[in-house]
Amino acid sequence: MKIMVIGGGGREHAIIRSLRKNPEVEKIWALPGNGGIARDAECVPVGATDLEGIRAFAKSHPVDYAVVAPDDPLALGCVDLLEAEGIPCFGPRKNAAVIEGSKVFAKNLMKKYGIPTAAYQVFDDPKAALAWLETALIPIVVKADGLALGKGVTVAMTRAEAENAVREVMEDRKFGSSGDRIVLEEYLEGPEVSVLSFTDGETVIPMISSMDHKRAGDGDTGLNTGGMGTVAPNPYYTPEIADRCMREIFLPTIRAMKAEGREFRGCLYFGLMITRDGPKVIEYNCRFGDPETQVVLPLLESDLLTVMRAVTEGRLAETEVRFSDRHACCVVLASAGYPAAYEKGYEITVPEEIWPHVLVAGAAEKDGKLVTSGGRVLGVTAVADTLGDAISAAYARAERVTFGNRYMRRDIGRRALQAARE
Image (cartoon, rainbow, N blue to C red; front, side, top):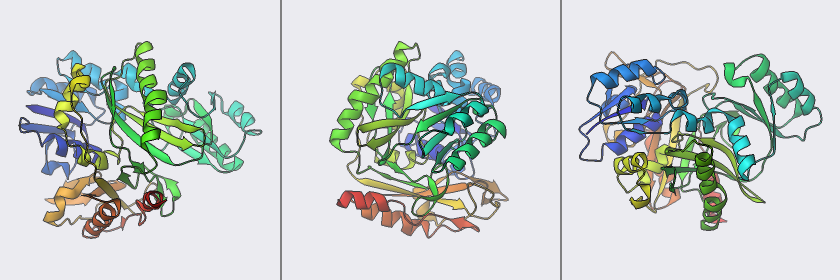
C-alpha cells in the first residue's frame, strides 16, 4: 500500500513512524516532509497548503491512501479535493474542520448544544471589544477567531495585557484575516488535559490523555509556544473524569457536528480544563496535536493504519483500538529565542542509536547534513513503565542530541509527577 502524508513537522514524523509498522505499507510520501522525516519517507517539495500541487502529485502517483495532518490544509479543503480524485483520506472535510478553523463557530456550537465551556463574547470591531474590556473580569483570555499556528491565544493577567492583545490581533493584524473577529473568554482555572480521539462521525474512541507544556520557560513562564514537551497519560484525567467527558463533551460534540450537517471523521482533539465545576472545553483541534501525538502514538498497540481506515470507512465501532498502560515523555529541543526571533542553520548531531526516539520538526538537509530550520527543531521521546523513568530517559537521550543555539525546558513532566504523588 502506498500512502501520502501531508505535513512536515514532528507530528507527521510520529504518524509516519507508526504507519511504517504495518507490513502492507510499501511506500510513504511526505509532502513536504523535512530533513529528518527523509529517513522514514520520501519527501516531496510540495507545501502542505499547495492544494493544486498536492492534487497534481496524487494524480501522477499511485496513492492508495492519504493522511492530511495539519490544520491549514484541512481548513482549506484538502480532504474534499483528494476524495474528489478518488483517494480515501484520514481527516475531516472542510465543513467539519471549521471546528478548529473558527473559534467563534466552536463556541457557538458548544453554547447551542449545551457542551460545557467558558463564558464568552464575540467582537468584530476593536473599539467595541476594548470598551467591553473596561469592565470585564480579569484575568481574561483573548483568542483570534481563525488559525494562527497555535499562537493566536493570549491569557491576559492584566487589563493592559488584554487591551494590547486585542490591538495586536485586530488593529495590527498580527495574524492577518484570522483576527477579523475575536473571542473574549472567561478565564478558567484548573489542570489542563489534552485528549485526542478517533471518530468516524458516529463512534468516538479517546486516545491516551496527555499533558502539554505551552510556555517557553521553566515553571510555565515566558511566551506561549506550540508546545515544549508532553507526557502521557495525564494524571489529572481520572476514570471518573473520562466517563464524564464522554457523556458531557465527546459524544455531544460528535452528535452536534452531525446535526449541523458537518459529520466529523478523523482525529478530533479536545483541549480540556478540569475546573471545580467539572471538565470544560478550552478548544477543539481538527487533527492530531503537536507535540501530543509524539507521546500518544508510541503508546498505541493497535495498528494505526487499520484504525485510520476504519475511521474513513465508518467502521470504527467494530475495530479494536488498544493502548499500552505504560508512560511516555517527549522533550522538545528548540532554537533559543523561539517563539520570537531565533537563528537557524546549525548542524544537528544525533547518535545513531538515538534516532528511533527522535521526531524531527524544524530541520532541513543541506550538503548532506541535517541543520536547524525552525523554532521547534525536534522532539526526543521515551516510553517506560513509570512516568519518572520515561522523563529521565527522554532527558538522557535529549542531552546526546546537539546543535548550536539549542534550548529546552528542564521541567517537562514535573507537574505531572507531583500530581501522581498526591
